[in-house]
Structures are given as structure tokens and as C-alpha cells.
Length: 109
Image (cartoon, rainbow, N blue to C red; front, side, top):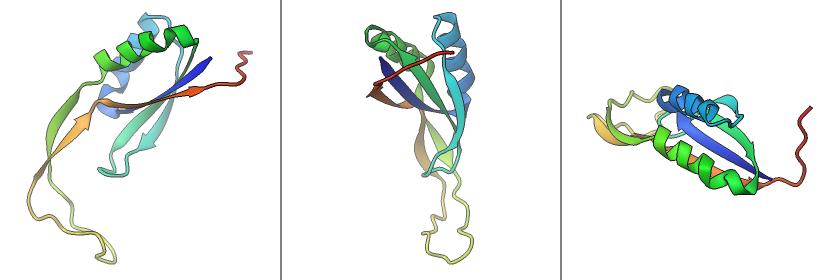
């Protein structure tokens, strides 16, 4: 048994959720926040048999495409420790960060 943990941008969340359901995979969705952009993410927890990992990875790959976006940085609030970038910067968003873990025990009640 494997646990696939996929962290995706909120913009890709519904598409991934729909594709997982269409292909018969169960997933738990958790709201999360990214550290770099401080933007909303969704973390999917997907328990599958070892033979299904590549299928799930394919669904994630087709549902979550990386793209570039212009970001207007905010002025830092508070102590001024964070550097100020006075102009828009191009950042890569979307895609997915995926972890695959061995699961010692799995139970579904």
C-alpha cells in the first residue's frame, strides 16, 4: 500500500479532484498554504495499491500544469526583515509537488 501526497495550487484542485473521481480513486482534500507565495494550496491524500501509483501520478500530471505568473510583491509588514522587491516578478505556479510513502497499515471502515 502507498500513500500519495500531492500539494497542488487551488486553481488546479477541482480539475484534479474531478479526474481522480472519474478514474475511481478516492482522495482526502486538505486546505493548505504555500510558504513562498503564501497562496492557497490543496493537499490531496490518496491511498492506493503499489500497482496504481503510476496511474495516480499520470492523473496528477495531466491535471496540474505549471505556468508562469507575474506577482506584485506586497510591502513587508512588521519588522522589515523580509526584503522588499519594488517591481513585479515572474514566478512559476501550478504543477504539483508529490510524495509517495509506504503505508504499513491501511483500514477503511
